[in-house]
Amino acid sequence: MTELEGETPGHARGRLLRRARQSMIELALGGVFLAFVVFADRAGSGAASAAAVAAAVGVLAVWLLVYIWWHRSFDEFERGLELKAIALAAGIIIVAASGWGLAELVLDAPTAPIVFIAPAFSVVYATIRMLIGRAYR
Amino acid sequence: MKNRLRDLRGEKGWSQARLAELARVSRQTIQALESGRYDPSLPLAFTLAKLFGRRIEDIFEP
Image (cartoon, rainbow over all chains, first blue to last red):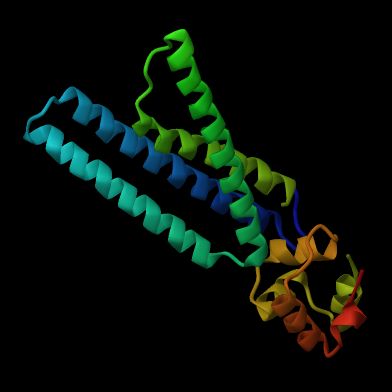
């Protein structure tokens, strides 16, 4: 663990834990969203399915609010790092989704529902954010 | 961009945490500025210049 100047090991640990907690929240939201989507898909077309869809939409709304809250709480340097992570993650997901779409079209690969893009973005974004955070700690 | 932040901060006797608090940024940002890995926005450069009682060009040089 790298300590910044004048920083105690306890503070350095706390700083890294805060960053890890953000990634954990990101992954947790992606996981909960995915769980509701899978449940809705398996529940068929009844009331349970409708409730799961509503819950999934609610998770997306919370997700958006968390992004906004994070974005507002960062200073200019941190915001730059976040935007870099978001841009990289979005680029990776777009390329991967397009590649898979091409494979579906040409190679008859199994269809991947577009609803999985949000949780996939969550995983890639959380990973990149951790890597960038380590590079600039 | 080179800067004299570390020296000026030393003259004031401030820790990175103290400067971060005064400039209303994170300590990670101060660390990135001092190590030259990040160039501040104009508003932040003005804030830092004001804190040290210097002109921007006395702190940062291309």
